[in-house]
Length: 262
Ligand SMILES: NC(=O)c1ccc[n+]([C@@H]2O[C@H](COP(=O)([O-])OP(=O)(O)OC[C@H]3O[C@@H](n4cnc5c(N)ncnc54)[C@H](O)[C@@H]3O)[C@@H](O)[C@H]2O)c1
Image 1 (tube, rainbow, N blue to C red):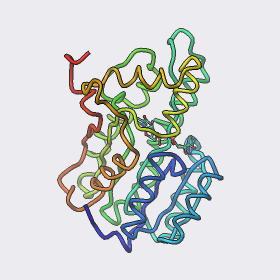
Image 2: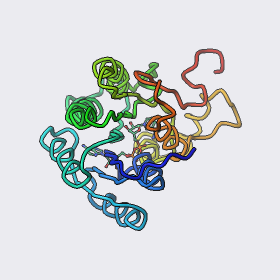
Image 3: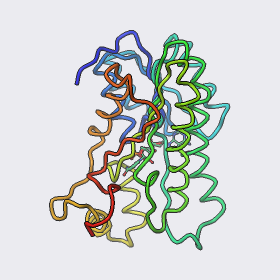
Image 4: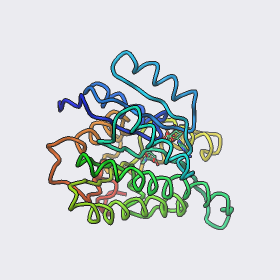
């Protein structure tokens, strides 16, 4: 779909990552001014350099688990972009394994980034979003909708994202600010590669095969591309999505649809 976003400012967290960079490219192609935040300054600068040929881009190294950093990111957006029309929260971390083996630090870092980070980015962007009747798109997950074994911490963080999306949507509906989440299954990004490398027992391809074996498409299953997720995020930020708020939209080949395909 096309939708001219020139004159608007889009803030994207986790912009150096797979989904974040695909979203940045999608919004850049539509002419939006971009304010890109990520902890990884190297990937951020690479992307900003690439997109500078297409649109106005500001890169801000930030840790979304720090409220001070989040406030600085939003202040940069106001200073350099004049305000905020769209916030896309993609910064995230993965952890998996038996719950009995999880350390306090595992809980803290994943919940701090995925849940606390998403909440405070929304919170601190809202005053500007209200001025422009803007919108938020949060990256939740199929894990935000259904349980899977040995992912309790990640799932708790994404379940929180899915429900805070609904609560915020109701809170700011009167200001005509929309808040939605997308809930993807496995996307081929650095996060998925990290999962396979870290938790695949030395056989990343086997890890990928095990994931895909749970898809209802059977032998025809494949991973989602970051561009497919970015297109949904872009649609949710468009005027065509005006009636959509408080939604958790699945993009998962049906993996969260129900039972009966295993
Ligand atoms: N890849 C998948 O299979 C998948 C599936 C469902 C949902 N998601 C969610 O989509 C989002 C994007 O995931 P991705 O696959 O692009 O991952 P990714 O690892 O490619 O990108 C995540 C980005 O977040 C950044 N980040 C991490 N901690 C941060 C912090 N404290 N402050 C700022 N930035 C930080 C990383 O540097 C990285 O650039 C995440 O929220 C993830 O949980 C991913």
